Length: 253
Image (cartoon, rainbow, N blue to C red; front, side, top):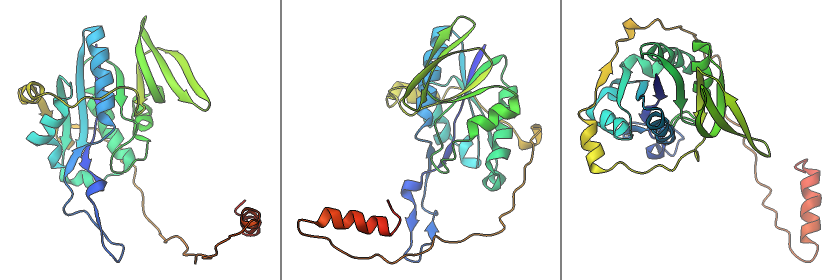
């Protein structure tokens, strides 16, 4: 049995330059492992050790995802190996097409019973990849998972819900999206970074995958309506009452 972790190596929007005219400049942004994925890898490593199985990473992205830096960054976190699709054309893919490719990579890993993902991606933050992968695989998907442990033939999953945490007994196969607090992530030690260079990373050509293409067309866009600030200050003993009345009059409250 194998456990798979889907990770993303993408541009970090924290390094984006926003020009005075509102144009977003991505030219100086360097790719990095998505902030949430180390949590999924850490959880996967713990499960793989407990079950004495292998932990395989999968990723779909631009050519940089197959670079030595990307390999070292991802595999030093605890992955035993990785399968990646690295193609410049992927930059134009939508989330559905990317998830289709990830599902195809899952099918290339022997005897997979569990797929883990991070809570979200560092660049888009759509939080739909886990559900899309599960849809293509025909597996159930559980999001906002804050804890998971082996239980019989499946797993005991703790899922964050409104007002608390729900504990479920989940059979496999399944896809789990880990919450950002599901594990304490430690930076890899130097020996782990060095060991990552010796771990296998296979680059799978796009042509080897049976990808489902779901096309979308942007038919229009608009900026939010600009509204002038009232620039009104309330003071004195009745300031709070006057503020509440003003908010009611503007239909804010």
